Length: 99
Image (cartoon, rainbow, N blue to C red; front, top):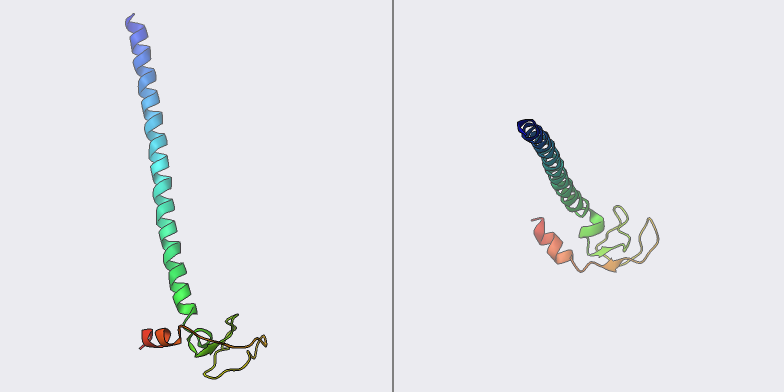
């Protein structure tokens, strides 16, 4: 009888160690994933802010496709794609944000 109890305790200890290792692994993977996702979000926000500071975003009239350097202070067409420039509704907001 003592031998059976001893075997069960050994099996329980082995299973306990396996469960602890498994849970530790899951915790480590979850932590790494959360940190890497946080870094990606920060990079994306920075890239978006940097991209929207060009003439194609801040001028009074902008190309609907936001072609590089396509903005103008007057109505006209985009030199790159030929589309008609549209009034930039955010023009006043963007110019104050950069001051």
